[in-house]
Image (cartoon, rainbow, N blue to C red; front, side, top):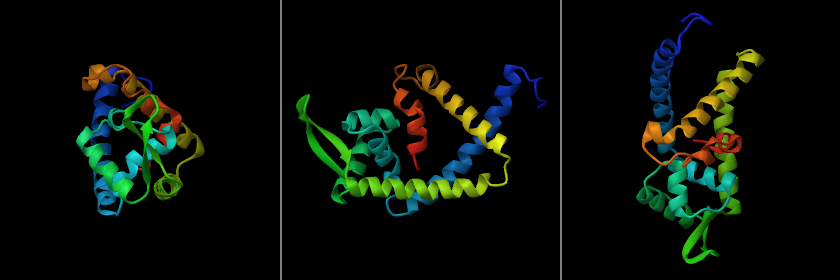
Length: 173
């Protein structure tokens, strides 16, 4: 695809091919992280650290995971002292989940590991290319989040928390 000459349809075809390849590579990376102790917890812990206390239902919506999956993983995080439950002050029947100090440390460890791996990959790239990659990838994620209902069948803006720069930086998975 030549720079500046691609139509939106041409770009969509090329991007779709690259996204499929990227998803396969990320799936392999995530599969390896699932084999690491605590690998499946990273996304939930990241959301709690970067976005603050949440109810399990909100955490499931934020992360696009099934509530039963979130509940099972949260139970494990609580048992290991990485997350705590407190009564929700707005609705005492519910509970707010938040990262403990040990949970914050685990999140920082996971994030540092991920960042070290990505830095190795990006080291040979020119600074401008790295900047543009981050800028454009963020823009693509923001557009996906904005168009979630159309793309994934859910309420518009339901993934808005995932579209923030802090959330992008925070997810170590």
